[in-house]
Length: 180
Image (cartoon, rainbow, N blue to C red):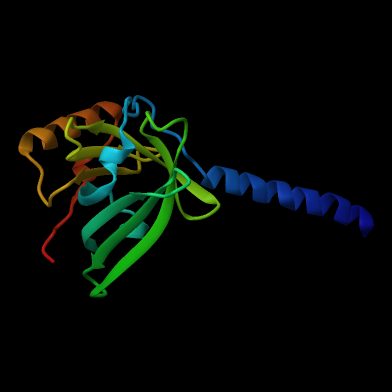
């Protein structure tokens, strides 16, 4: 019995470690690159989600916003809020984002359920920090954000073309309603 425990416990811990490691993907899709000379101070504040891919954490949500603020230790507080139009209720989640390398490169990792982290990569942003294109760790995650509930057609096209060149299926984007 003791021999079985000597094998089973380390094996179980190894499997658990592999599962946790694989769930903590903070990469960036092949062909994408994070914005350099990024200014976190200009990025903080409220953003409206203009478009996204459908996934379970934002399913059936409209009026979705993300508000970023700086934490004293240098990380970024992330407050996501949206209206679930099926359940007819507001949902909110608060997490933390940290820079993967340094604050001048827009490669971050974000967590709402520590110790699980996911990639958050600003891959395009206008000079005035009004519109941003965000890539997750893989081609399953993409967001278009704006400081207002609308985005100019020229920016929309720029972001869609960039995403398509990387390999995103932009036809699958959900265009978020902002009516509340």
